[in-house]
Image 1 (cartoon, rainbow, N blue to C red):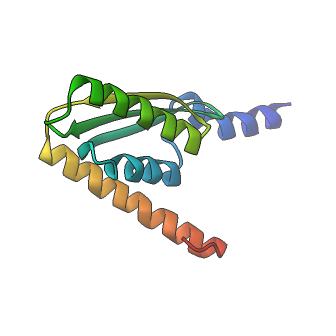
Image 2: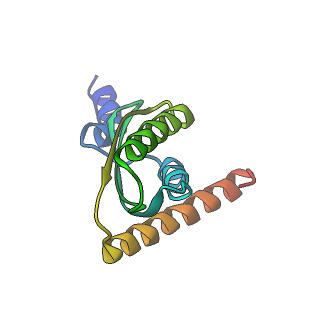
Length: 130
């Protein structure tokens, strides 16, 4: 019984404390948002497991300054739906339209590129083409 408890605790423990989402999901979320015409820059992207199959996504975005309130609302709804459709494990999406922060955006970009390299490496090891 103690061995079962240890194995379960080890496997699920990281989820209980809010582990980040899988690298492939983080990269895809970043790319989907960065590719939108309304987005000038992804400033910060945070993910957290809420449970074994539940992921929270929180993103700070620098949006195009010419967008109206209605356009921002439409973008938010479309982006939320796109992310949830692409990744059913995403159950919570928080989009924060914020001011530009070049330093934070640069750190976020570096982090995403490191994750992208991990995804490409893992796909190569598994024999899956990107």
